Length: 309
Image 1 (tube, rainbow, N blue to C red):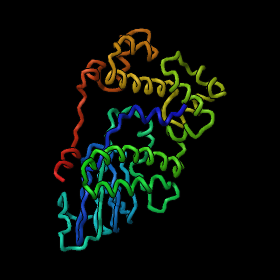
Image 2 (image 1 turned 30 degrees about the vertical axis):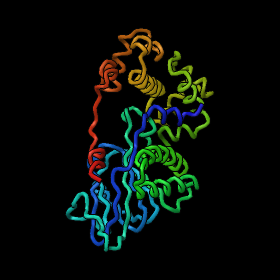
Image 3 (image 1 turned 90 degrees about the horizontal axis):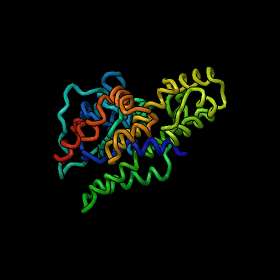
């Protein structure tokens, strides 16, 4: 069972490039209030990333990729120090000017990020350097292809970049797993021989009558040892993980199928529709009826910005 593919599939990812430009001289780009996961590819040149709330400045070079799995206040500029003022977007280089930097900025939009264990396990910022060992030749080729298609603006380029950036997110996940030294979260659990068996079993049969005892059997551990070990690794109890994954699967079924709420409840391991509705609302913040009607709305600042460029 490929758990990562299972998790990625239910993210219902949509992505694209929303900003591309070249600058010269003094410039700064404001990346706050995006309301989505974002990425910045330094196509050419050197610049600085400023994490406003952390007072951290990071040097970036051509080929570097920065990914923000969640909305974090940041700016990118030509200076080592954060700018006092940001004109967003900055003035692009003129036809008679030689640009010192070329940036490609995009977004990753997920249908239900608040429930996804993979996104929760990711740090606020992922910096994949041009020379990072975690970058495969396939990822380098993909970034080059994204750059070429974005700059070409040929017929069909926008649709192609949409699909390429979706693939990019999978490469980001792989690179994060390869370079990560985290000892808790879904990534750590997947790297653990015992817990990976548990996750695979839950993902294969989310509606099974799971209990801590049965999950412990999958791990080959005693009940008490397993419960403590699982929580230390994932920051949630075994049954909390089962519930969250069930609700993720149910959310997908409500949004993208005509299966009745009663049947979804049964498939999710609940004996009554009422108990399922209660848990679903507590977990997702929305009732099954609201999700089915497509009444869940999110701000999309980046899509509106994209239409300007």
